[in-house]
Amino acid sequence: MKTLLIIDVQNDFMPSGSLPVPNGDEIVPVINKIRDKFDLVIGTQDWHPKDHISFASNHEGKSNFDVIEIHNQPQILWPDHCVQGTEGAKFHPGLNTEKFEAIFRKGTDKTIDSYSAFYDNGHLKSTGLTGYLKEKEITQLYVCGLAADICVYFSIIDALQEGFSCYFIDDASKALDTKEFETLKKEMIAKGIQIVRSESL
Image (spheres, rainbow, N blue to C red):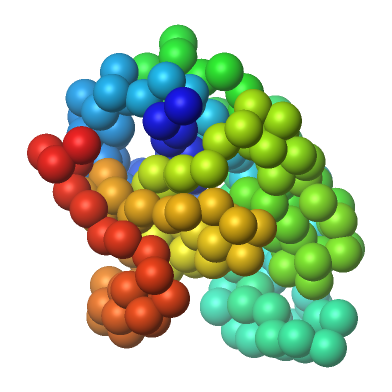
């Protein structure tokens, strides 16, 4: 089955949200246009408790985008975003979610961040997405969403390591740091990830 994985198209990542991805709202019509080209459509949501360790507000004396160390790895401190049950955690209202067969939530453990749709950042706990896909005998994944340089990137790298053939849909994704993402795209290509555009699907 041709499978689309849509990462974190949530209100807080939109231009008016608490952690805005530049022009993040522009991908919504692109995703709506391509979704019917897939047999299986899956969505993910950042779904943080309000006391999440990645929020700068939970660290006295720290500011947004400071970097600290958690579990022996660097952790960017983010503005509060996608807090469970809030308006910011909801999907963009223009995103057509009717065809979503499943939604996987991540970042639910307050003690560790989770960029990838497959694992937390320490690879300590799985979201169950790998098992779900393998049970359905999925071998190829098309991935898009927000932010391209963070949650989409880490999801597609984990998908590759889990044995899936991976395609990144460039115009259905936006990066928080576009310059950094150009470097990451070269890395993705070197790893065998194919970069495609919506019109080629």
